[in-house]
Image 1 (cartoon, rainbow, N blue to C red):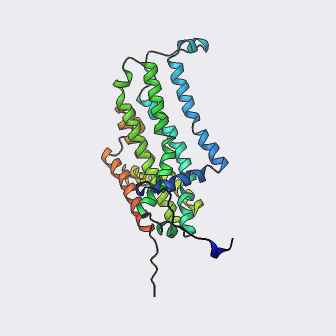
Image 2 (image 1 turned 120 degrees about the vertical axis):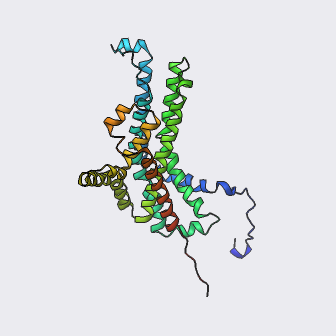
Image 3 (image 1 turned 60 degrees about the vertical axis):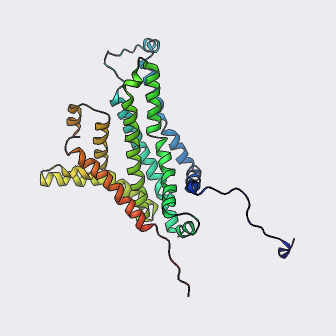
Length: 294
């Protein structure tokens, strides 16, 4: 059929609600990530620690399995807040690798190829674009950190019984707060670095440097000035301090781990300040170009 014989009509199908437009970016961002087989394999590997911790909980509550493998446990409770904090620590490290892998290409390609202007020319705001990008990463990290930890908590509560769940409901709250805080820091930090550098390899390297090399600079600062304020440059240490408070670790264990080197308020202030600074960077960089008509 010739082109001039075609008649074009306006789209009359269902419209996407305005409040959920950001989910389009999240959905396609996740689908793009899982087209990579190595990434998919590593995402599956992140579930291995969960199976190990869940198996341990089952063995602790099953005397038949203990007799089969000739394993004996003392009267000291093995499944406590430190157990769940340990699981969160393992998953936080594995989720960091996920973020370093997934975050830079998710947003750096849009800036490198000037695709941001195409996004913002549609009925989508800068905030919706940012929420769409961050939510895909946050959802992925949630499935790796606090959600499986909550499943372990439910398994423990079911097997232990005797009101253990009600007595330790605060552990579930600590898991959620600790997981969301970690996800907020690592998601915003990785996105801000990717926007600033705009090169995937450099962004990944800079993210690793901020979390693992910057603490070395803080230690050198402490040695020179004989102070402890250099710990504020060690973001993983600050996160562990807050986690120790949330999971109510004994004071002796906190002292041995060095979690009392700086005041708790300073740890919260530093991490929240990092989040605010990252949002400011994203706000400054995430701008469409204005075209003047002559």
